Image (cartoon, rainbow, N blue to C red; front, top):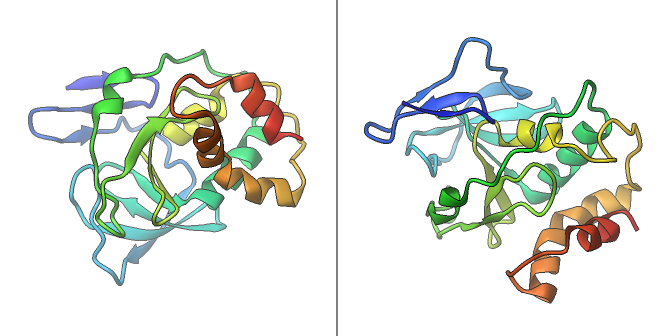
Length: 195
């Protein structure tokens, strides 16, 4: 099995199984039950379950690989709140896993191929997103990796104005549309987030 140390789990490329050590946290997920629609996990193909993240946001959750499907606006708000209220020291910088950029997964909602791209925020995470459904797929540990990444917003106890939090959902796509999918000036992007 291959260890993904930044996210805290093991994965077998041969059989597709996951192993989560007993100390692995649930990342704020509370299961509600099976979904009415038969949505399949884009990573392992198992049925997704209805769940709540941080007791506030409705999400779809895979019990097998522990991935989460959520709306982009919910993702933006969760990241802002969790980083603002983070406690403890930040985690060490984690390098971007370039091989993850080659992954191809289908959106559980519309079955179109999801876009795979680096998250243009903290944590060096490779994101899977569906523009058509305005949804984001997070593999287990990615949200924790984003929240733990160093940055001046982490632990600040300050949140942007409510209108800015909801507009963060489209910042990633807007920035890429204006500047292309090449190199990104992260300072410029962060400046846009907090103005």
